[in-house]
Length: 160
Image 1 (cartoon, rainbow, N blue to C red):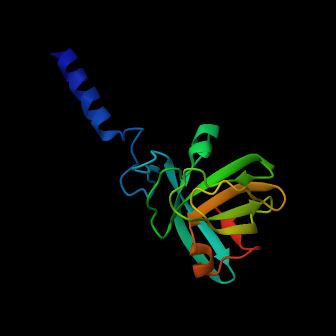
Image 2: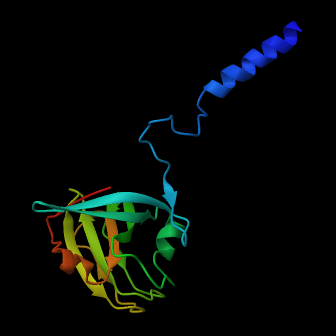
């Protein structure tokens, strides 16, 4: 009988302890989401342009394999979606549009976290190199024309 009481008490205690894999009640912590097509982690990203802050949800292409695939074969992307390619260590970047179906804006983020240059409206399937000006810590891909639509320009701050 004593063993049964101890077991019941332990089970009751365990039921009151939050699971380490879940956020505590009332917590604002959320688990990272995965993109339904790529399976990549989706993270928030902002571009501060003057007094305007533009918010995006971008896929995080971390590995060489994820970066090599990028947006290839994708047929659509939401207006406030994109993909970020972190570069660690910083380096000169060169992208192409091989097997990329939709036009893209490639936004090169310099070592200071600011836009160094933009390759706007990259042409689908074009294999011409699109290069950064100087070293970059990341390349952000948005829908073609989106940077101009929002007034993004070199010098704007990118954070993720």
